Image (cartoon, rainbow, N blue to C red; front, side, top):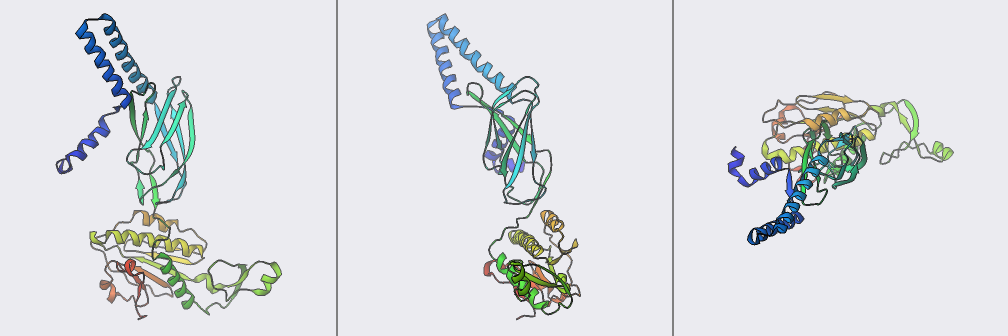
Length: 368
C-alpha cells in the first residue's frame, strides 16, 4: 500500500500487467474505428445494409477474441537447465512447450520474459498441435545470484486476425540455484597472481618425497619440469612431490557489513567464487570460512559446496569476530571493517577491504 502512494503509476502498471490479459493492437483500433463509423452512418441514414455490415464486423471481433482465448489456454512450459548455473553466464536451456488440449492446436504463440532477463530474445512457435509438445534450445542468462523461484514468463498470441493480443502469464515451477559469477572482474586476476605467488613462497622447498610425473599445467612454476621425460615423450611434464599436494588456500569472508557496503559485499562474494574456482583448477586445497559455515575442499574435488554457500549468503549488521587457524596456509580475508580484526591475530593474511577495488592492491599484514 505504501508503494502505491509513493508511485501510483507503478502500481497501476503492476495492476494492468496482472489483470488485463488482452491488449488491442493498432490494427484492432483501426478496425474498431471503422466499425464505429459504419455504425454511426447506419444510425444516421437508417440503412439496414450498414447495420448488417456492423453486425458482421462485431462478430469478427468476437470470433477473433474467442479463438485467441482458446488457442492460448492449456499451454504448459517446462524449462530444463544445467545442474550448475552461474550468474551473468549464458547457459543452454531446453524449453518444452506442451499443448494440453487434445484436439485443438494453438497457432502463432510468442513466449517472452515477463520483466525478466532470462532469455536473450523472444521465442515464436507457429503451431503447436493438440496434445503435442514442442522443444527448442535457447540461451538463458540469470543476472543475479541466489534462488530464482518466481520468475514468470508471458505467452501471447494475436491469432487469427491480429486485432488483439491475448496474454497469459506462467510461473517457473522449479527453483533454480544460481551461483555467483566466476568470471574475472577488475582486480581479480591481480589478486589471484598475488595469492599464487604467496603459495609458491610459503611452500617452496617443502617437497621431499617424489609422487609422480604429470603433464604441465599452464601458469605453474617451471622449476619442476622433468626435461628428460619431456624429451622422451614430446610433451611437457613436471615432477610432482607429495608435499605439493598439501598446498592450502584459505578464503575467509567476514559477514559483518552494512548497507553502505552492500555493493562491495557482492564483489567480495564474486571474488571468493573466482579464487576458489581458479585455485581448485590448479590443484590446491581450499578452506572456506565465515561466521556460520566452514568447509575444506580437498585436491581434485569439486568446489560446488563453496559456490552453493556463496549463492545464498547475506551480510549481517553484527557478526562474531574470526580468528585464524594454526596451520601453514595462504589466507585471503574479505572484510568490510578490517580494523576490528586487528586484535584477532591475522598477521600474515592478505586482507581485501572496500578500498581494494578502487586501488587494485590488497593489504597484507606483516608485509609492510
